[in-house]
Amino acid sequence: MKETATQEFNRAARLLPSSLRAAVLQLPTAVAAKVEEVRLRTGQKPSAVVGDVEINILPEYRVKPSDLQLVLEIATRASVHSYADNIRMGFVTAEGGCRLGLCGTAATENGRVTALRRLSSLCIRIPHEKKGCADTVFERLIGEGFESTIIISPPAGGKTTLLRELVRKLSEFGKRVCLVDERNEVAGTFEGESCFDLGDKTDILTGAPKAEGVFMLLRSMAPQIIAFDEISSPLDIEAVQLSANCGVKLLVTAHGNGIDDLKSRTLYRRLLDGGIFRRAVIIENNEGVRSYKVEELM
Image 1: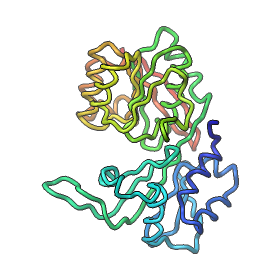
Image 2: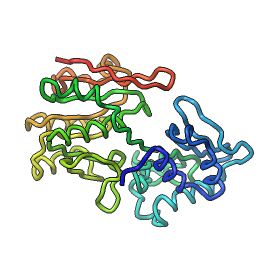
Image 3: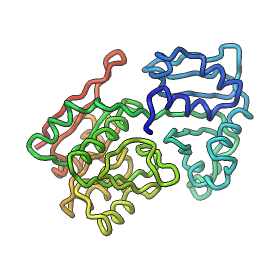
């Protein structure tokens, strides 16, 4: 059974120490359904993020280093060492797709982060499944045949939620969709099964870097569409170009405030000028209300 917004929130709350969990679960249901993040900073009040606002959860409480360590223990099922590579990169994805963003003291060697120690803060990102949020966008994208599409919004602007829903709708439309879920945020796969409904024709590759994952899928799964979240590095650009060169359509996301913003950055300019993407979906947020604008790029 797939989860409601409140169930997703409750799942995230279970990652917290008992005292904080009780306070979080006392939030009104209407507020809990809108919580996007829970943030813990050592020596500060715990907070919940709703839109652009942080709400103090337990004003008289100050987060202790042991609270952060306990959250990490719960999220990794007391197997922190097995998540060392993820922790080094500043995140852990827990059961159900909740991602922990981590800050602390980085140990480095030859300019490369080798470990993250003495946690100072963490952010629990709560994934949301919002069926129906992409209905209007989907009709625009599929009307004359699906073309490669990039979803653009600022951080925490709803890209992953929209991506998840578009993957589901494309799959239910009859397309073979392959998802490269590098950080396990889109599907929230646990013991081989997605915690979210991504459609019955979607194949999910979890944990692989995007470029390598795309190569694996092209070689073995004959995708019609490849989807992945957050283009953020030259290797991700290689994954996009590899897919396009093989005639596979793409559905991807990027951080930005629109096409002009992306074109002002070297990483994206070559990609957009190359004509790989035919459409863009721009996510706009007006006082907490999200809207979607489809732009033709070709």
